[in-house]
Amino acid sequence: MKHIFKIVAILVAISAIWVTFLETSTVPRSYTWLLPIYLEVALGCYGLFMVGFGLMFFPTCPQEAILLQQDIVEAKEFLAKKGVDVGSE
Image (cartoon, rainbow, N blue to C red; front, side, top):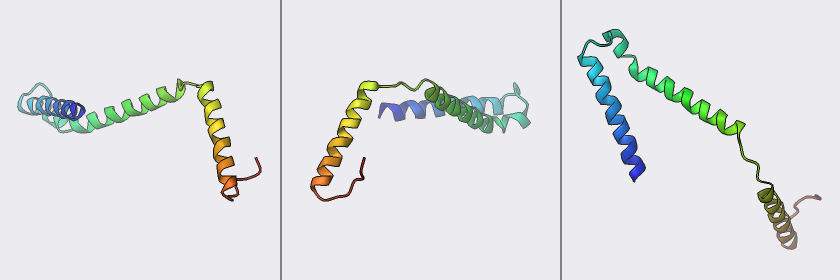
């Protein structure tokens, strides 16, 4: 629930800034109407950057890989006992 309040607070702050820009003449009116679009593009770029950064520095977990392989072997044995064909590997 705290996360929702945080998001709503950020949206309200951004909306207040946008309305302030609309009401004052600090930014030309023709540019002010495009600010929400610029914000969406910036958020999209940020999201793509974070995904790319996460993929570049994805942690490898050799111990977890071994545990996963053991779980796979156990699952194949269990399914083979139940009569399910799980492949020859």
